[in-house]
Image (cartoon, rainbow, N blue to C red; front, side):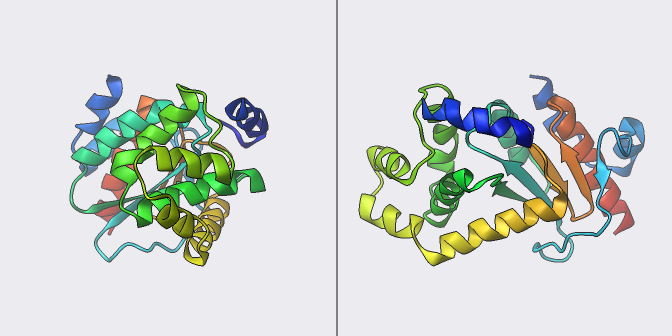
Length: 217
């Protein structure tokens, strides 16, 4: 979803081909065969973004927003892709903030991450917004929902409001700006490439670019 469409998305929130892509081998030969086109399938970052992953790892960032229907639809495929990725690929999810209204949802994700609850509640948060039509866009609504999932309300509230969580949200906004994110879902590859979400092909292109990064070192 494009940045310009998010205001309507937030208002609304308030009221198999991919499997094949996940199984493709990460090889230079694949990169040549897929032939992703710069300017069409991906953008080369003019000023490379520093990565946080260790040497030898290819860092993949997923830029997303819980309120984005396209992110909701992309999530099962991306999760399957994560399960099949090779050991030399490090994946990090980055919740975007196109306006201050997004910050509570950023804090939701980073609180779940800090409490080791991403596997349990990340997908459920998407479902709550897009299937159950729950308005998980404000702190009270988010905290109430998380508590109903069996999480200690006091502990989650403390983490949600903590300075550390706020710093992670600010860092996410910095990454989104560094990659020039204008819509979600989107991927950042190794601080070098940016891919706007294109459905199943996004992961095919990501595989090819990861192979290219590995080949070039």
